[in-house]
Image 1 (tube, protein in one colour):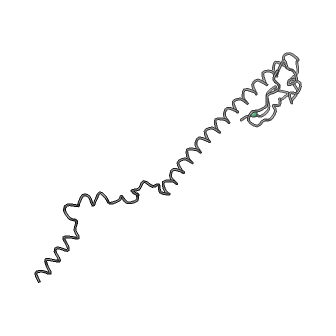
Image 2: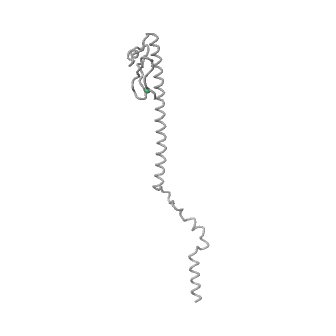
Image 3: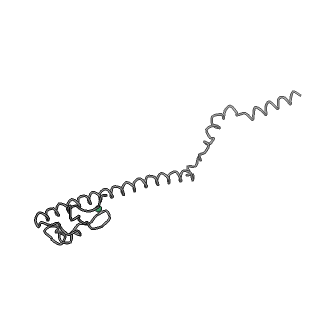
Length: 139
Ligand SMILES: [Zn+2]
């Protein structure tokens, strides 16, 4: 009877951690959710891919909007150039240039490099013959 009690207590004592291996046993346990061999999980690959996609979208959007703004500014400058030369034509000849700017565009003393076209949509500029202003191009 007493031997049975002793073996039970000894068995219980063995199941608990031995006093000399307590700290080593806890340090070797892997942290939940991570592998100890340094491999990359599918979730990590997906997370990195999502971050790269967001950064790429921001960069592409930034470049496209900057290009649109530059073209709109160039159209504004072309409009002002056409209108000022049309006013000069009006002062020198007494009439406004043709609506399609065919006469002033052919005169190399006004446009030595030819008539500019809109850098935003590539269309030609036209003139309102009563006001001397370029029609449209309100980008
Ligand atoms: Zn334009």
